[in-house]
Length: 620
Image 1 (cartoon, rainbow, N blue to C red):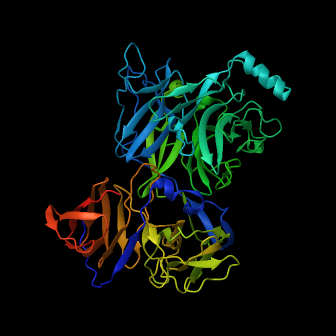
Image 2 (image 1 turned 135 degrees about the vertical axis):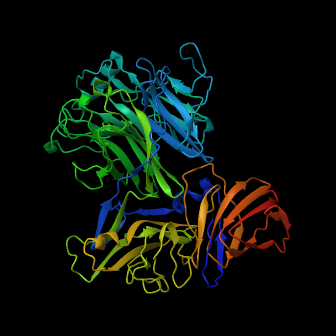
């Protein structure tokens, strides 16, 4: 709860166009997400530079630990994959007891405190009281495929098996080579599930790519399926060093027929030495036009047992070709912890996911256990601010004597529809004099649109992960359906004359979103003065939203939609403000448990620090 003392009065009308996730993310209506770390959307960069941010390890790490005497006694992780569905975090992880491998399942309401439910599906030491979902397989990273019309195949996973001789001979005939792959690991089968718990292994297409590969992950991006694996031992002759690992990419249009790409998706240049090489599973976070990847890096060791592995950040705009964001093979986005910590030696990555105002990274790691380091792993959590892998700011270098720093980015033409109603900015503003961020909307040729120029833009001075951009107080974009437009971001900062503080006090840009306002269940959003509702986006296909809801307020406040079904909704407001709601579906309501009148679909009340509004609804 907070007390707001602003003396001004304003009226902010918020049209909340609430729709389902599936509707909201079809075709060209998907939100444009312009990330600071993605150079592909930028056509012109004037005096701006990129800085990477290491994620912050959670103080309660590890969040999921090994359990003595059980099937996950030696390993909880290495390949772990987390989704957020219906407000629940769901994790699939590799479990190992020193002899028996499995893919096991855990769930959490907050992403920190995990339970391993007794599913009763598969026996371990004579008992089915365990959380095993796929016995006998390791390195399983399931993904949810909403593009498949068959609900029984909603979840998919690639499974590692050891190749028999018949399949290596088939591969040799296709390639004209002879490779010692008998009993080598490979993607041996796919499994499907309607719910992520009950899995069916497809035995109709064994070893679709009979080549040595490990650590698979799957992605559906821009209409194609991608299978990412780790390959080594000169599988790409002449491209990578003989003893290096690389990221291999295979593609499919139907999830049945797969083709291995002609070159690796990513590898370190052999000139850096054989001991700087990729490792593990490609974890990722997917957006409309870019995929952000997290990958492992071996370095400075000749043997696996020397256990030195950090994490690097990659991006791809086509799913095939990947680039390290900082292009420095000796740099890492996340380093091993100091000696003595639980994650002091060997980091392996998982996927990232957005959860409210933060982006989560689940990773597995080893303590310093000498020869036992390879198999003993727990899982931890690290976080960025939402989409805050890195930032862009005016280039400072060592020129601290300047009186003013300025820089700008101009995008390539972006295809917009009338569903793209608002521009939101993820940025750290500054209230120091002459420190500001402004946004301009241009036509396809780069001409500023009237009413949406830099001079019209209300300067961004707040720190927010989704602040609506306004021009002379308006947030709604012009009707440009089917046309292309450009976005220009301008950052200005006066030198505070404090030398080394110049960069620290510089405004930072993290991401820009071209979207429409959305209020998600169990998600607190800020109502900003004269700007409107903050955009805090969840990647949760099952999270319900409201429809047809509008409200106004005369003071800044926050709102959380805590309950929504066909007949009931609950909204919790924090802040002292006069608030009005208009919802055609509302039939009855109560404020803090007491009846409140509804007049012409309008509900008006005063919130004093905190107010809970419960509403009965007409079914849709």
